[in-house]
Length: 437
Image 1 (cartoon, rainbow, N blue to C red):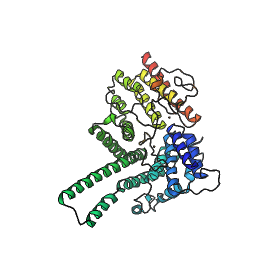
Image 2: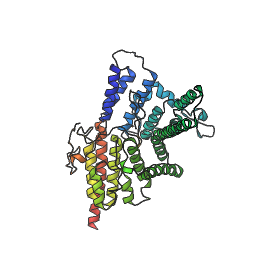
Image 3: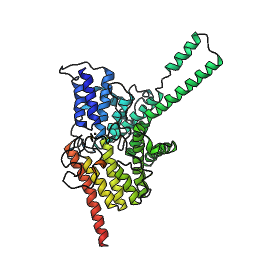
């Protein structure tokens, strides 16, 4: 059908990093029904899944400040925030003010189970990554959504199959001891698999709960965030998989490692902090080995990353290398960042951003029209090409080492280039001061 094709097209655009076009497709599907008719009935489940995907798409390529205009005021609400389902969900988890002036969630005990925790998770994530454009209470509201999304993810376990098998046995007059033992073993195996699945579903939610604690600030919140990220990194190390983890769990590990680096910055050596920042290419790994940072073997790869995650990881790496006085490494990381701003998709088999499970500043999951489970959340180059930045500056970065991280607008490209220019100028200033002393 036409609607089905539009869903596939929107997902394809998202995976290619063409998030602005994907946003237009989801807007068409949700506001005009995906056809030329003015009014088209859309199934509630399909509508919620589309909203969840559209929120994930927005989050995947968000640039801090892009919702603001001059003077710090919101330009306007994005069309997603005008949707009735989103408004109802926000109203249900709205924060009221008590007589004592304290913020309080209404009807706390009644808001445990969420029928679509993916939607709640993606909405909360979008609110967190765009929190600089919102009132402080929105972060608490997003945290509350995530708390209930986690509870819902952990309590949705499929026990129907076990109950059905037991009822069949009773109807057949029972089973012998050996068959009963095998049945019990089968049930235990199924329960273990269900618990593992529930834990996988809850992992990205917990990562973003930790991110909300970072945004809320304060020693207690930061300690909770630190515990969450340390637990994730430690579990990956104990499992023996670590950097060899693939897909969703690998992205979650990279997210936890990066955000742990942010929390430990200034409390650990610069070398240790740098080792925690996920690497986006073979260049980053060899660069650590040559710099004496000792990060080669322990490097955490940034797998299945969104454009936002790639940009953040590259800038964080450049910043730490600048602190180390490694001017070559810093400039190479900035060169990769500048080049990546013009690549929405490699198209050459060297990898794509794909779906994200975690956040470097928040992440999003996506569900496609085929009702798949949670997917945790890019070939052409434009001006400047892969070896130049927006101003035409040459870069020594090899094309194969350039990840894809094109922002959704030209203004955001300019903003990221300005950030890179600032760090480069600071690095050159410090180097010039050092040469004079």
